[in-house]
Amino acid sequence: MPIYEYFCPVCRDRFELILPISKSVENALCPQCRSISGKILSSCYQHRSKSYLDKLNERKAEVEYKADRRMEEDKLLQPENWLAKVKKEREGEKAFKKEVERTFGKDPDAPLRYAVAVENEIRIKKEDPWAND
Image (tube, rainbow, N blue to C red; front, side):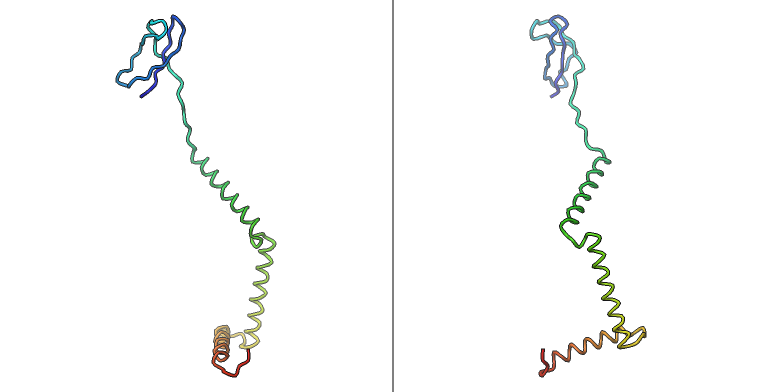
């Protein structure tokens, strides 16, 4: 039920009444002096919900915070360490390419022939009873 606020002009008292909407009246009796009091516009509580932009900014801040935390925890994610890891991987790829070119030449199917040769070598080692590990 809504709360209605009234003001008494005689005793200058301000009071509230809780009434159903169907029984709301413009004038009510003052509980102190029993004179007729008029209804006044009362202040009301206003709840402001967050706007889309506020929610978006909160999500962005949370993502940035999590990213910063992850950078602190995982040293490989830091730019210097990541760059060193990529350089090491590239050097490995270049070494592999040189090994393939040295063994099988620059033919387009050379990497495939290299992979088959490595698999055969591994299979032979597994099947060879006299192989020393």
